[in-house]
Image (tube, rainbow, N blue to C red):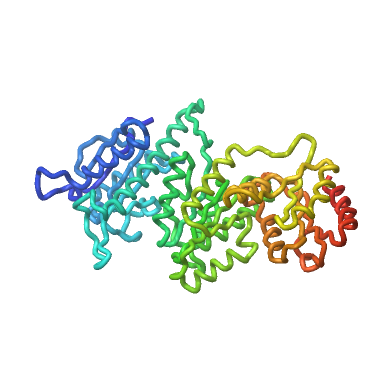
Length: 475
């Protein structure tokens, strides 16, 4: 590892103060970043600041793990600052780890930023006046406004730097001594509309705090073709994608007719199909905000597509609940997926007997036939908290070999929901194909014949006989 953990480079003017007794903006930033990184790393980091006129020698550049550029118009106009960035890039061009971060002390459009830094993730550390829209620098770093913007971005930066330092350390430790309890699982946390950027950052920090690698780890391209290529590349390396859908439709990249949020969801569904065919682990979690009263017609149409279109739902679990509940469910999904082992018993296959509480007595003969045929029977839960009941259902969807839906006193809508659950089962983390699906019904079930499911109709005696044929095929 390098001697310097973080090298902060800046234009001289951006650290000037009116009074000599005061500390400059960059000096304060360095102090706060040091404190934050100490909390995250557990050890005190080595952070060095270097202005454009600093006479620190070139070898110091070779000894730095991470470069943080404090971007302003003065920085962009400084040839020395740009040269320093260029030198660092050349020294680290072979590294697969993200080692350059940009902190925006004042607003700069993408075009105003140096080409070398445009793809780097930016951390906005300035204050915008909500009434006038004017930018102003923080004079009080401990105000309520600073807490909402400056410190939240500082936490983001600290966790992202921690991530890169950890990756660099893992690369150096060829013996594999650097271990992580979650085995460095990689998650795609999709970019959101502006209304959910704070919530996305909270989830991102929480995931990183638990040791997950979170992508994308760079700004997404503004051109549609480049963006799609980057998103697909990132998703290919992930085992889970998380999508937060709110009121804002999101930005539409150049050359596209969909928003970035929409495009990411579309590509994730395509990746889910491809990974299912190659039996790779990949699942999706889609959270839809409960309050959508300010959503545009386009956003409402997008959300309706997610809810109804089976292609948009491919491999996905869709939830519309309070964000805290979603985070708990996501945490549960991730932790369980690390330790998940096949629930198959030696020499036997399992069948999930999906039924409603009102039909519990009626399915007893079917359950008896299944057990006598040597199958392990998985049953839904009806007692306990809603989350516990749901957890049992998800566990069963992950682990069954075959599934039987029983339609007795329930209506067609209930059956359709359960068939849809079976369709979405790969999204819950299944790592094996579904070997058979059947719908057993005492009434007319012809309306489900296009649902890619075996229909077993008739009275109880005839249903049992037809069911035995289905089980024989399953074996």
